[in-house]
Amino acid sequence: IELVDTAGYVGQTKTWAFDDVRGEVADKARSAGLTALAGTHVVALVLDAAAALKSQRVINSRELQLVSQVFAEGKALVVVANKMDALPGPRERKLYLDTLHARLTERLHDGGSLALVQMSATTGKGVADLLPQVLSTHLNWDMKLGTGKLNRWLKQLVIDSAPGGTSRDLA
Image (cartoon, rainbow, N blue to C red; front, side, top):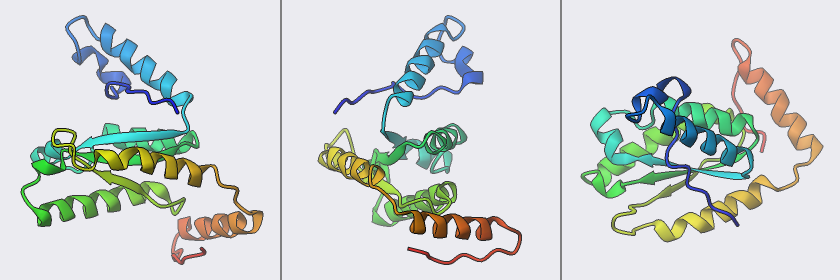
């Protein structure tokens, strides 16, 4: 197992604003992150719950773009909701997680379930859950899928994507 910390994901059009040398450092960080993404099987996307509380958005457009890229490249995804201790109480944590789940499920297109780890790197709560979830996600990602099940899923995706399509579970 090789774990790579990409030090954040900087959108290509915004690199100039991330350092004091017109984006030179950010460009190199972005390039290194994309290289790491190309060579991985599972991506752990770490989200900042404290930032979400301040911005009133559970996930920003840059992070959603990365989610789309992960799926487009056929990678598995583990979403890590960090700084959960920054949310005031259980009701707010549940609302954050439910909203995050709904927002990300829109991107999944019924392509699988969402692997989500709640944690606080500061307190250590939930940190021990991360690696087992990554391993479990990798096993599911690497699982062989029968042609019949894949064809049924694809047929339903086409129906659901068509105007007036209906959703139903084919599992």
